[in-house]
Length: 596
View 1 (cartoon, rainbow, N blue to C red):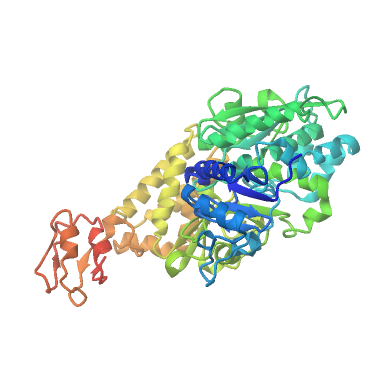
View 2: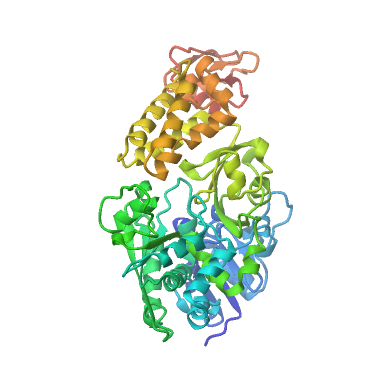
């Protein structure tokens, strides 16, 4: 076995890959070999570190130096200054905005301080393409434990006692789902991993699959043992090429090492896993539609009951858990129920992974204990909003969720608290909005998504969401009329009550939550023909304020239709009849003399 004095970890997640991490990794290998250090320093490709806006990220251990936005041309400095001379390369170190000096160590960065990584425990710490590295962090020890020392019912009882709830939607108790499938009668049973996350801005499951694929395989094998299944399927979207490739590698390695296949650990238990690639249909995130797709049919939901735990894949009892739920299983088995239940709240145990996106400084992936407040996530971990802008709302739960307004910044993030204010946990997307966000336009955006993704099987979802979207388009287009708000509410309640599956039942949530907390914005759009946030183009009326205009003429030069005229050093004039409301003049004016 080789021993290295230093390890250079290079993020190999999708975000850093798109930023050029492969070239950085190649440059490191070349430079180390040239300096004769390739036997002393190991370069390790890992999964996502979570701090996505800073990629490519390189961490050098044992110091823990956290280098960000590293380019191939930066590599010689890292090798010469850090690895040879022992000096940190300060210009590449991450620097907190509120600190004067660079933060050099991974553990000192605010983004990570309040996180508690369970599902993401190995992401960014191991090479996901080497099963030996998973073994080194207790990989497959949980599977060994259940096969050697626990009965299937004891495994189910442990998961039930942990209080683990499904991390992909409504938060159903995982142990209860397993018990239903275990008790169901069937010659064949199945375990299915739902890796088809389709929410805009969500990439939690992708990051686990890219950074720690074996934890999902191990958890599925444990689930198979618990319910009496010998076959598992991972339904993953084809748009995740890195995740798919690493899953294939992990499955092959697990088979080779005897962690999958026949007679695992010589205990008479056999279990294998296959991949099924989805084509990106949002509706296939719904359990019954997903199963139809796995069977090779069109992904459309069916009425429930019977639930999949009783009659699922190919008519057999089936449990379906998403990636994040499964990633919690091995630690629960190894560390115990008391450890897991000590984290989180009374009814929401453990942690939750969120994908931070939108108007926030630290975009990326975070994992926090249930009950952490929204304020802590946005300001302590997320670093606040860019440009000192004011927080307005956060969207949780994606297209099925709701908007959380500023008055609930201190609400604890857990299943019950979010439900009380009209939102939901969902898979974990968290999109932050500031004062420049129009809540009517936000509602329209999410409804456009769900309407486009509707499978069309049931009339309430197919036609109801279309009618709601047409009303929202009219409102944001300056054609709103009295009664539109009430019609939106009536349609929303009908769709929620009559739709066949969860997609339709939750599609109106963004509209209902914005109406609940930002009704005045809808009223301004309809009654005053005004967008308070200045977003809806049809409702904008640009004018040059004479007292502010210095007559520089930059706005006139920028206007593509010649709507602005005047003479230098005198206030310019904007012809509203010619104006196409493109906003180019506003962006160019250095004196903020153009209002809208």
